[in-house]
Structure formats: structure tokens, C-alpha cells
Length: 325
Image (tube, rainbow, N blue to C red; front, side):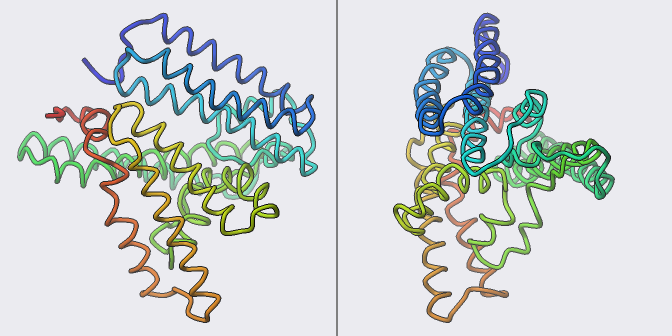
């Protein structure tokens, strides 16, 4: 059976109803309660709700569990970042703007939707064309991965083609298409993945190049609230810890194996970014080719910790027909 086909329709119906409740209640929580109460309620919902979702989909295949957990966590984190932005003076989101931000955009900057303009914004066509091109290339790589498996039975070669193919299709394809569509409607969304190969160190990669939705989310929900209280270093490590825990939810929990490995990956990177900051303060910033070599070594070398074999076997390989064992 496909890991992405639910075994029980009622589970999908209950999950969908729960997500609708989060969307409706989330708008009220973020806009009608005090910041302290809203924060406590939203973070409690994230923890308790995640446990509830996991119990609900416990009997479902790994792909279904992954999508359910990611969808729930993404929506609750949307509520949390709206709460934090409201605390900093952002004007309220209309319910329609909230629906667009929560349900049709992967970024984590609600201010973009609070200050939408009436006409189309420049750059929409470029993003749409770029997204379409990347989606086509990504789909081609996924097809090549399938062909390489059926012809050579090499999981390694298939994975080397499949993982970049999925990233190009989703991260650089779909996300750019969505950004372009929103710019046509006057919302200043931009690319969430911005030329990561140009990163000159890990700090630049994580903060300004790769998955800006995560960096926006951790900056708003964790780093900014904690930096003044604990200091920049502990706040940065807390942000990486949250990223690690959310990746545990998306990678480890669905396949019920490899617990702690995604968290370890992000904690290693948090520590390495602190090393980069220390080197910069000492007058030895990591930049240029040396910085790039450093960054991509540490991104690639521990990658099997993040995308461990049980996750590949349970969620990724079945996409092109590779059996887990």
C-alpha cells in the first residue's frame, strides 16, 4: 500500500475538521486575546495538539502521518508568528488575509498580508517563470531517479537524483509559483529559497538563503523574544533547537525511527554558526571560497543524520517505487 494513501477515511475527515478549527480559532486567539494569554494558548496547542494528531493518525501509513503532522504544526506556527507580530504593532489581519497567509503561503511574515496593495507588484512574472522552469527540471530529475532505479537498482544513485529533484520541484518550483501569484494580487511575497549555492558561510545559508519560512518563523517566535532575555547565543541555539524538533516531527515521528538525529543535525549547525560569529568577532570571517567550502562540507557531511535511512525507506523512496528493504 502507498505510504500516502490513508487507510481510514474518517481519520482524514477528523483531521480536516481539526485544521479548520485551528484556522478559525487561530485568528481569534491572535487578535482578541492579550499577548501573554495568546502565546500560552498557542504554544500549548502546538504541544498538546501534536500529541493528539499523532494519536489520531497512529494507524496510518508514514506519508499520511508526515503530512498530518506538518500541516498541523505549520498552521499553529502561523498563529504564533501573528501573535508576535501583533505584539510589535502589526495591524490586524482581516479574516480573508489570514486565510491567505495561513492556507496558501508557506512563508512566515504576516506583515506582508497586513499591508497588501491594490494592484500587481513587479517581479511576479519572473517568479512564475522561474518557478515553472525549476518545477520542470525537478520533475525531470524525479523521472530520471525512477529510471535509474528500474534500470540499475541503485538506491544511492536514485536518491542523489530524487532528493534534489523533489527540492527543485517543491522549494524552487511551487514556492516561486505561489510567490508570483501573490505578487499579482499585491502581496509582496518573495522567493523563500534564494540562491543557496552562493552562501559564503552557514550563517548566511540558514538566515538569508535556505528556507526563509523557517528563519522567519524562528526569528519571530523564538530568537527575538529570547535574545533580550537570554542573549543572542542562547536565543540562536533555541531557534535551531525548535527547527530540529519540528524536523523530528516531520522526519522521525512519521517513520518512528531515528529519534534525535534531526535535532542533532540542527544543534550541530547552531554550534557551527556560533563558531562563525566568534571567528568574525576575532577578525577572521569565513567568506569567499573558504567559507563556501566550510559551509557545504558541514551541510553535506552529516546529511545522513537528517535524512536517515528509515525516513528514506518509509517516505521518500516509495515515491518512485523503491521498496524499503
